[in-house]
Amino acid sequence: MKYLIVGLGNKGVVYTETRHNVGFKVAEHLAKVIDAPFKTANFGWIAEGKYKGRKIFILKPDTYMNLSGKAVKYWMQKENIPLENLMVITDDLALPFGTLRMKSKGSDAGHNGLKSIQEELQTQQYPRLRFGISADFTEGRQIDYVLGTWNTTENEQLPERIEMFSKAILSFVFAGIQNTMSAFNGK
Image 1 (cartoon, rainbow, N blue to C red):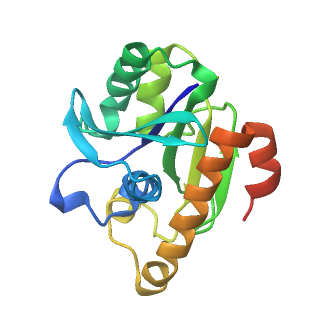
Image 2: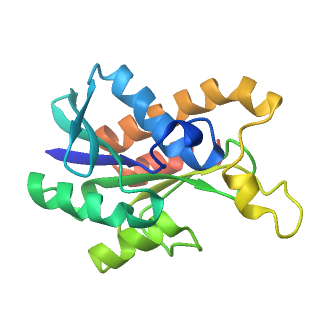
């Protein structure tokens, strides 16, 4: 069984510590947990590893957020990964900071990375893992907030939250999405 775990973010040092790149952060931590180093590949950086007999590909697209779907589609086709074995990690303004919400399907909720994936795959029926970044910004400042860096409190809590997200992904790989949603959603 093969799985594709995709952390959404933007390439470049200027984006590394931004809220919008939390998908990259989770992907990087997960790769360390399963001892799978990233290598430069088509459409991004890919890490290959195993967890309890299952092969995991972890992808950080280098296409920028708005074109993430091209990278996802390429790797799904290249490795023949079924839709239900895809997990996309993304930031979510609608959830309080650090909140974990896994879903088996859903809309893009205005997120350009998810919108791109939906367009390329021609479906909303794919698993995603949303990382709450809250919506602590004044009207008209959404882009600055999303592309801004974490505040001091968030920075202190981030490692523990990323660890929890990594555990949820490994649960998804081993125990399936329903069991994982029951065990982790809202934590």
